[in-house]
Length: 160
Image (cartoon, rainbow, N blue to C red; front, top):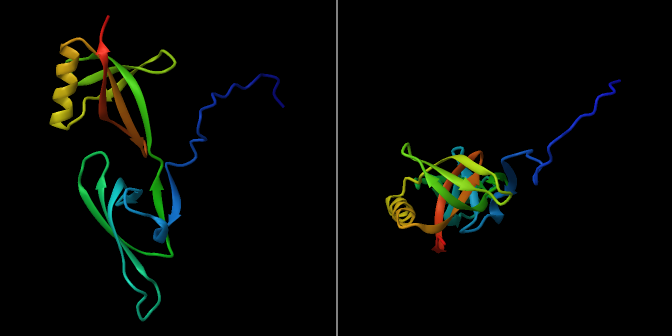
Protein backbone atom coordinates (compact mmCIF):
# COMPACT_ATOMS: atom_id res chain seq x y z
CA UNK A 1 0.00 0.00 0.00
CA UNK A 2 1.40 3.37 1.01
CA UNK A 3 4.47 4.09 3.09
CA UNK A 4 3.47 7.64 4.04
CA UNK A 5 2.06 8.27 7.48
CA UNK A 6 -1.46 9.52 7.89
CA UNK A 7 -2.19 12.00 10.64
CA UNK A 8 -5.73 12.41 11.93
CA UNK A 9 -6.74 15.20 14.29
CA UNK A 10 -8.72 13.59 17.06
CA UNK A 11 -11.52 15.52 18.68
CA UNK A 12 -13.46 14.85 21.87
CA UNK A 13 -16.54 13.68 19.98
CA UNK A 14 -16.71 11.38 16.99
CA UNK A 15 -18.59 14.04 15.06
CA UNK A 16 -20.84 11.36 13.64
CA UNK A 17 -24.14 13.12 14.09
CA UNK A 18 -25.60 16.40 15.24
CA UNK A 19 -28.56 14.58 16.78
CA UNK A 20 -29.43 11.26 18.42
CA UNK A 21 -32.73 9.35 18.46
CA UNK A 22 -34.82 9.14 21.61
CA UNK A 23 -38.28 7.68 22.08
CA UNK A 24 -40.87 10.48 22.11
CA UNK A 25 -42.54 9.18 25.27
CA UNK A 26 -39.29 9.57 27.27
CA UNK A 27 -38.65 13.23 26.38
CA UNK A 28 -39.53 15.50 29.29
CA UNK A 29 -39.97 19.21 29.96
CA UNK A 30 -36.64 21.13 29.91
CA UNK A 31 -35.16 18.49 27.61
CA UNK A 32 -34.21 19.17 23.99
CA UNK A 33 -35.89 18.09 20.74
CA UNK A 34 -35.50 18.85 17.04
CA UNK A 35 -38.67 20.45 15.64
CA UNK A 36 -38.83 21.50 11.98
CA UNK A 37 -35.02 21.04 11.75
CA UNK A 38 -34.41 23.49 14.63
CA UNK A 39 -32.98 22.59 18.07
CA UNK A 40 -35.59 23.43 20.71
CA UNK A 41 -35.85 23.35 24.49
CA UNK A 42 -39.07 21.61 25.50
CA UNK A 43 -41.31 23.89 27.59
CA UNK A 44 -44.48 21.78 27.55
CA UNK A 45 -45.29 18.11 26.95
CA UNK A 46 -48.74 16.58 26.91
CA UNK A 47 -49.60 12.99 26.08
CA UNK A 48 -52.95 11.94 24.65
CA UNK A 49 -54.45 8.53 25.33
CA UNK A 50 -54.25 5.72 22.81
CA UNK A 51 -57.03 6.12 20.31
CA UNK A 52 -59.04 3.67 18.29
CA UNK A 53 -56.06 2.96 16.04
CA UNK A 54 -53.29 2.54 18.56
CA UNK A 55 -50.67 5.14 19.23
CA UNK A 56 -50.64 7.53 22.17
CA UNK A 57 -49.44 10.90 20.90
CA UNK A 58 -47.02 13.35 22.51
CA UNK A 59 -47.60 17.04 21.89
CA UNK A 60 -44.36 19.03 22.29
CA UNK A 61 -44.11 22.80 22.62
CA UNK A 62 -40.52 23.99 22.29
CA UNK A 63 -38.61 27.26 22.12
CA UNK A 64 -35.84 27.45 19.50
CA UNK A 65 -32.62 27.72 21.54
CA UNK A 66 -31.06 30.19 19.08
CA UNK A 67 -33.84 32.51 17.90
CA UNK A 68 -36.47 32.08 20.65
CA UNK A 69 -39.33 31.12 18.29
CA UNK A 70 -42.06 28.84 19.62
CA UNK A 71 -42.45 25.58 17.67
CA UNK A 72 -44.92 22.72 18.15
CA UNK A 73 -44.89 19.08 17.09
CA UNK A 74 -47.09 16.02 17.60
CA UNK A 75 -45.38 12.60 17.52
CA UNK A 76 -46.61 9.09 18.38
CA UNK A 77 -45.09 8.30 21.80
CA UNK A 78 -43.56 5.02 20.60
CA UNK A 79 -41.71 6.69 17.70
CA UNK A 80 -38.21 8.11 17.90
CA UNK A 81 -37.54 11.85 17.84
CA UNK A 82 -34.27 13.55 17.05
CA UNK A 83 -32.61 15.12 20.07
CA UNK A 84 -29.78 17.61 19.40
CA UNK A 85 -26.38 17.33 21.08
CA UNK A 86 -26.26 20.62 22.98
CA UNK A 87 -22.92 21.78 24.35
CA UNK A 88 -22.07 24.79 26.48
CA UNK A 89 -18.53 26.11 26.52
CA UNK A 90 -17.05 29.07 28.41
CA UNK A 91 -14.62 31.41 26.65
CA UNK A 92 -12.88 34.56 27.84
CA UNK A 93 -13.79 37.67 25.85
CA UNK A 94 -10.73 39.36 24.32
CA UNK A 95 -12.14 41.88 21.88
CA UNK A 96 -15.28 43.12 20.12
CA UNK A 97 -14.81 44.22 16.49
CA UNK A 98 -16.77 47.02 14.81
CA UNK A 99 -18.56 44.56 12.50
CA UNK A 100 -20.23 42.74 15.42
CA UNK A 101 -17.88 39.78 15.79
CA UNK A 102 -16.22 38.83 19.07
CA UNK A 103 -12.74 37.51 19.66
CA UNK A 104 -12.68 34.78 22.30
CA UNK A 105 -9.88 32.93 24.08
CA UNK A 106 -10.26 29.13 24.16
CA UNK A 107 -8.99 26.87 26.96
CA UNK A 108 -5.93 25.83 24.96
CA UNK A 109 -4.88 29.43 24.33
CA UNK A 110 -6.13 29.81 20.74
CA UNK A 111 -8.52 32.52 19.62
CA UNK A 112 -11.99 31.95 18.22
CA UNK A 113 -13.08 34.78 15.92
CA UNK A 114 -16.12 33.37 14.08
CA UNK A 115 -18.90 34.28 16.52
CA UNK A 116 -21.23 37.27 16.27
CA UNK A 117 -22.51 39.26 19.22
CA UNK A 118 -25.87 37.93 20.48
CA UNK A 119 -29.10 39.42 19.13
CA UNK A 120 -30.68 39.57 22.62
CA UNK A 121 -30.62 43.31 23.48
CA UNK A 122 -30.19 42.80 27.23
CA UNK A 123 -27.24 40.41 26.88
CA UNK A 124 -25.74 42.53 24.09
CA UNK A 125 -25.72 45.69 26.23
CA UNK A 126 -24.27 43.79 29.23
CA UNK A 127 -21.39 42.49 27.08
CA UNK A 128 -20.69 45.87 25.45
CA UNK A 129 -20.93 47.83 28.72
CA UNK A 130 -18.79 45.36 30.67
CA UNK A 131 -16.17 45.31 27.92
CA UNK A 132 -16.12 49.13 27.73
CA UNK A 133 -15.58 49.28 31.51
CA UNK A 134 -12.55 47.00 31.14
CA UNK A 135 -14.01 44.04 33.06
CA UNK A 136 -12.78 40.50 32.52
CA UNK A 137 -15.79 38.79 30.94
CA UNK A 138 -16.43 35.10 30.34
CA UNK A 139 -19.15 34.28 27.80
CA UNK A 140 -20.98 30.96 27.61
CA UNK A 141 -21.42 29.70 24.07
CA UNK A 142 -24.18 27.20 23.33
CA UNK A 143 -23.68 25.00 20.27
CA UNK A 144 -26.08 22.56 18.65
CA UNK A 145 -26.53 21.20 15.11
CA UNK A 146 -23.63 23.20 13.67
CA UNK A 147 -24.82 26.54 15.09
CA UNK A 148 -23.23 28.52 17.89
CA UNK A 149 -24.43 31.52 19.87
CA UNK A 150 -23.45 33.40 23.01
CA UNK A 151 -26.14 32.67 25.60
CA UNK A 152 -24.75 33.90 28.94
CA UNK A 153 -22.18 36.18 30.52
CA UNK A 154 -20.07 36.02 33.69
CA UNK A 155 -17.99 38.82 35.17
CA UNK A 156 -14.77 37.49 36.67
CA UNK A 157 -13.57 40.86 37.94
CA UNK A 158 -11.64 43.86 36.60
CA UNK A 159 -8.61 43.46 34.37
CA UNK A 160 -5.37 43.86 36.31
